Image (cartoon, rainbow, N blue to C red; front, side):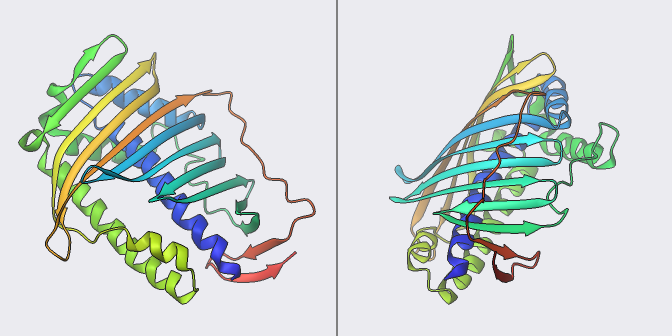
Length: 289
C-alpha cells in the first residue's frame, strides 16, 4: 500500500503539469501579434522565476468530468506545485516541492522523497540556447499562416480558429498528444490494478479510449505586459469515437495567470516528525525514515 499515495500523486501531477505546459505552448503558437507573443513567452520562461496559477475544466458531451486548480512556483532550478483535482466526484490534492536536488511530495498525509538533479533541466537555458531556438522554430512551423488570424487590441491578443482554419501540423500535434495520453492511461491502469488501488482504477476507467480524433476549434485570449506574458484563457474542442462507436465531444478550458516574475519564492514542505518514504529515480521504494 506504500505505492498508493505515489501513484495518486503521479496522476495528479501529470494532469496538472501537462495542462500548464500545453497552455504555455499554446501561447507560443499565437498569431498577428505572433512575434510579440513569442518574445513574451521566451522572456517569461527565461526569467526562471514566476508563479503560474491555472484553473481547468474538461467536459465530455457537455458533462463535466474533470475540474481542478494548479499553482506552480518557479525559482531558477527549484519549484513547488499544488494541484487539486475533482474527477467525476473523486477528489485528490497533491503538493510537491523540489529544492536543491530533493523532491518532496505529500498526498493524503503521506510523504515521499526523491533525490537527484533530474527536474531542473531549464536552469541553464538562455535565449541563445539550442533548446530555445529549436522550440521557436517548431512553433513557427506549427503556426504557419495562422499568424495573420490573430486580433491584437492593446495588451490583449485573441484568436478563434474553427475546423479547416486550424493548421494541419497543429491538428497532428494535438492528436498525437491525445494518443500519448491514452498510452499513459493504459499503462497507469495496469500498475494501479497491480497495486489494488480500486478508487484510482475507477478514475482511469472513466477516460475513454478514442480514435478518429478531430480538432474542432482552438480559442485563445491572452494578455501581455511589456515583454512578459501575464494571462491566458485557452479552449480546445476535439471529438473522437470510443471502442463502442460512441462519439465523444471533449472540451478543455484552461485559464492561467502568470505573476510575481522575479519575486517568487517556492513553498517548502516541512517533514519534521513525519514518516517519509524514499523513492529512487527508477520509482523503487526504500522504506521510511
